[in-house]
Length: 144
Image 1 (tube, rainbow, N blue to C red):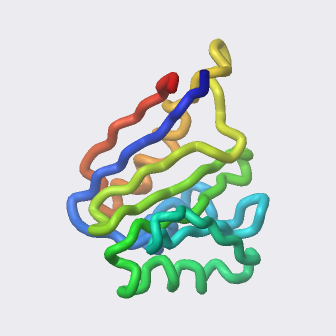
Image 2 (cartoon, one colour):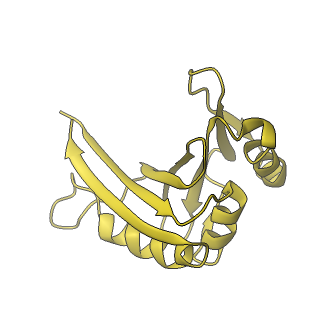
Image 3 (cartoon, one colour):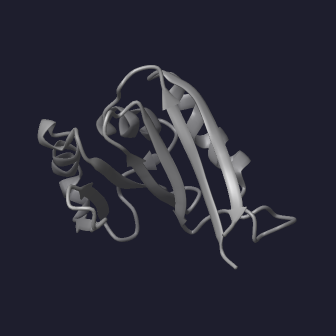
């Protein structure tokens, strides 16, 4: 058995990856994660993640937010260095919603470590995203 955890975020209007990253930066989130900067442009259905150096973060945002990629699912990894955790932020075509999947040193509940501490992630993600039009969310932690 494995676990899947994710938070689906719905926005009042289309957003950019850059806007999400800028909003989260004030809460300690960054594109800089242990591997550098990881990103995805799924234009071929293969979910082929790429890595770049930390000093290429601006270029990565230009690529994922490019008008050429608006019709494709894109993603970046975000990381909270003070908390030592992060994950994948995926934005499908249309960009009015996104999903966060805690994949980098996922925080577990203290009393049930196999389960994800979704409350921590919600407290770290939701307030800053309200400033860019977050309208709602749905959080799940399920056994596959």
